Image (cartoon, rainbow, N blue to C red; front, top):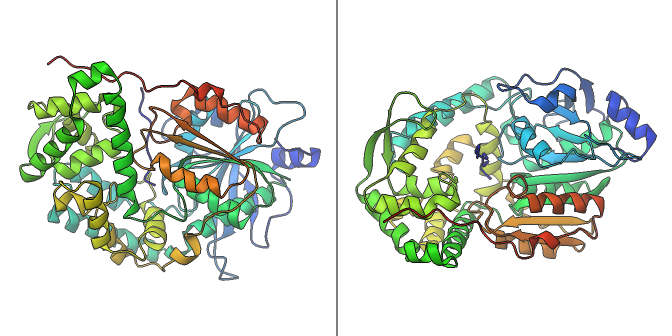
Length: 505
């Protein structure tokens, strides 16, 4: 799913160790091999890369076309901070998105202890930043910067967005990119090839958001060599569709409001948050606010339109943070839109060319959209929020105009091969947060039932991508990798959401 950016707020055998250190050895398949090279030069320095061993995994772009062109995927191996003796099996990370800059996640992974005792392997999924090719769409980034001054679901926004997508697709195809090859099946095969190319007898897998979808696909198709798999903020491969997003969003928001109602001070100050949200969505959709707003990091004021769709999607994007949502809604209801308006204005500053929108669209259009239509998204929205305007409910949260976009992107339907449950006896850890408005916590239950040796953990008061936000979840994950069939989950008992922000009346 769309990546949530957190705000500022090794091998078992000696031969495996040698190969991990030198990136040598025989490739995992006839066309897959590893080539050592310098670490990527990131826009902001990443300290952990200064001691990492980097390079590119060269793999077929489309494995169904023997002799076709190859692509290069950026890889970094971060050494363990305190390597155990004998060294432990490494952890390989599968990022969210799809399309997000994987290397940008490294500071959060290091801070969460992922490489404390094990080497941590990070590979950019095909088409991501630092790969060759990179399926970035600067055209879409520029639209996103401009979109803050347009209605979220306005026809003008749709027209400009489709033009940006059309231009990006034409450019990538002209470069020889096979858009049909950028899918979860090929992604999973890339990771299987990486393990073989590094001569690792086995490793551990950790993924979050779309990375859980990928991890489940990888576990289903390439179970060999997987010691244990941890999935955080689960996007189940058998369930994820565009209509599905409404159920997840409604669940997360409902849990946030219920947590407020369970805290006396919050309940007394904000007695009817569901009613307040509905009122504000309806009001703003009927009469959008147009404001000149200075982005949070400064700069010139920008034209900012705040309508019902924008309000809902700011909440889904955790801007403001869950603990501040009741206060922000209350302020909005009393004529002060500052928190939401500033969060909307922040979108006017985009990192041009860093997000692989091409990968997002290839996966969304091949795996999530087929079998349903725009009317199904609207139906799911009405079920979640029957009193909201159809103009808001017609757009899947975080994926506006996705069906028209898929009409432009034009990739093959892969729903039948992708929407398959993963059944496995490999030890698994399933982590969810009650405040997750992107991948609702309840959806993890169906996944866990098919993983016969799984442990499920639900962390109260935490949203999307749990581990970096929860010291308890970090301890659980570390104990899982140490003892995959008997992790210590005791710290979860008694956890409660942090107090919500209370503003004076």
